[in-house]
Length: 85
Image (cartoon, rainbow, N blue to C red; front, side):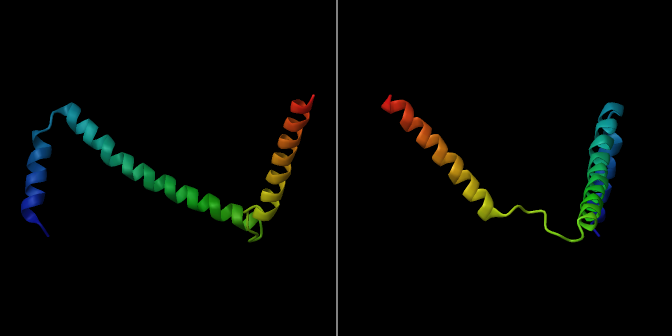
């Protein structure tokens, strides 16, 4: 344990003004709130996975690529018909 560091921190905190202590408190509490939020996010994700009976939520990438190619082909073909007129 680094006793000198702890003593230095304690002295620095004692030297803070009331506003500075409040700000320090907010900064320290913010991390704690993030940890609570992370726990909630993980619990929600697990609940969703259970509702889906373990099925993956990822879309079929081949189907997405095929659909995007069809859409792009339509765009290109419609552009050709305008330029010919």
